[in-house]
Length: 366
Picture (cartoon, helix red, strand yellow):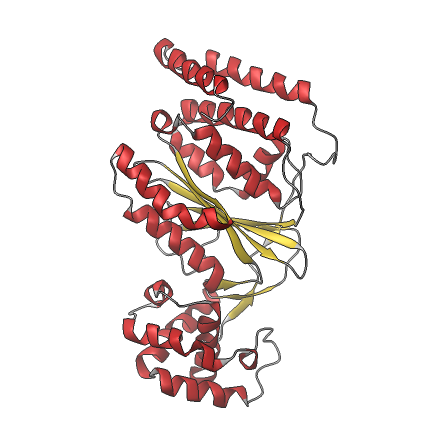
């Protein structure tokens, strides 16, 4: 299986509403043109790489005409791309599974269905999907609860994950991008580029300075059974924790994480990645283990937020300018012309346009 690589995050304000049909239909058409052109010129693997780049993804959303700084750019752009790929995935060698809310939980099944149609092993992609969500919800605890998850992939195993979390307290969303190549470990400094509007603090178990903490948690699980762990956690709750902690053990209801501790003990993980894979191991259980290991073994954990600042522009809601429908349609035609003039063979060009024509007659759904 190829190694997982989270390449960045983007932090966006929460906006209500959704793209109107007249815009979403155009987004589907334009997204299809862009993806076909990229795949024709550079291959489907490059499309996957582009989706792993938070800056490119944001610019792509702007090109499609959605809100320049809205959290909805993630869900709407992903939804438009999913529609754009319908009917052409096999020809392009490019698939997208998942989405928002309940749809995100269907990701493994959608990956397996694609594997059945084309013929490849879905297991590594299903694992990548599940683990990327587990890392960003448990190993990196930054206050954002995941509600959107999608994976774009090729039959040969190239993949990228785009997922988003919500923080209802500060009214922002944070987007996480993962890339399945070029990394030997995803539990130490895995982020290539992390983009956000502001920085905060996070329980960051994938920071380099959390290396001892990762080892300490595994040792703790090996040496202590669930009952003894619960006793130690309750005792530690009575102590005064270091002032730098913004997440305190006393905020955790130890009795409620007993089941998670039993699951970890039964699995007996050899290293932190295996521990993270444990079914039922959630953010609170891991947080309790991390802070307990720090007190017992002196293994400090990082609270450094890996985010950097981002940029964006675009606009469904009229900022910085309303969507120009005529210009939008002209852009679609310009991309069609780019395909015609690309280095595709005559037969390949004809096939691409035949598929596009059929998709358009079907109302942009494919």
